Length: 394
Image 1 (cartoon, rainbow, N blue to C red):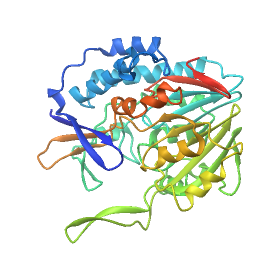
Image 2 (tube, rainbow, N blue to C red):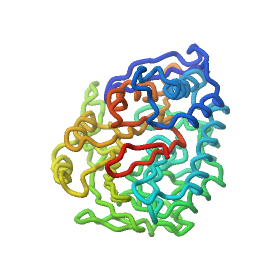
Image 3 (cartoon, helix red, strand yellow):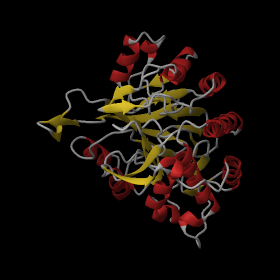
């Protein structure tokens, strides 16, 4: 199968990396990658070597190369991914929560599990690139025709998804789950259904709750809507929430030209700032527009206990990184890399994978990584962040 692989440059431009199977065979196997990641934590870079010249960077870039070479539907990739998720779930269960600070596990794309004394919670964890907002991976794989979405045909098949046992284990370990917005790469129909069935707390925006209630998801009426006017305490987690949106505008074709037009019903996007372990941790989801109402809200966090120490940052809007760096200079863990649901079929019938990979992230964050102010993390890795101390693997 022919793949065209792209790296996202900024927000609008796409630059081709390589034409799929013509990409050179990766030199590191998946077992090699696992061994390197077990040895080198997310911050273990050599000050003397270039960021891209370390064993850890080579391992991350090898994941990009495997996907570029084989596409996102390869069985070895799926086995590697599920093994990484197994490792994370085992560690979440077995590693004690820190007495001070927060242990952060990177799951898939924009999803994280956070463990602090007395609490284990998650934000935007999904089981993989399952493109149906109201469907399971098994149902998506049963489809025979490409989906129509976003102005083009999408590939619906998925190999990267969790086993039923992984889903049950996740629901057992998590006390509360937070969702920024309703899109499939941030809200998992399957995992949220599992969490609600287990009696766990799920927090999300109003249109997410309405989506699931109208689809007759069991227990969807129990999804919690956060108070935007004041801090919330949910399952022992203090959280401040901004009621944002993903797209105030959308692109439409008008008189043969693509133009920005006002979006009458944009997806709601909660921006969360969590207080746990003596730290403030922000996840911005896909909130667009660091001006108007949102920018003053961000400014209002400065010099308070809510000023973010850590940003789980999606650069969905081009000013996101610049804004938070200028306001807070936080420790940044970038998100949304290798979002393998962003696959389309072009007019020639070829599959195009539009993603930002680890190679791109390492280039973009090289300076902050050298300064100890950022970490590019992959599936199943963890990082301990404590107040006033450099982050560590343990």
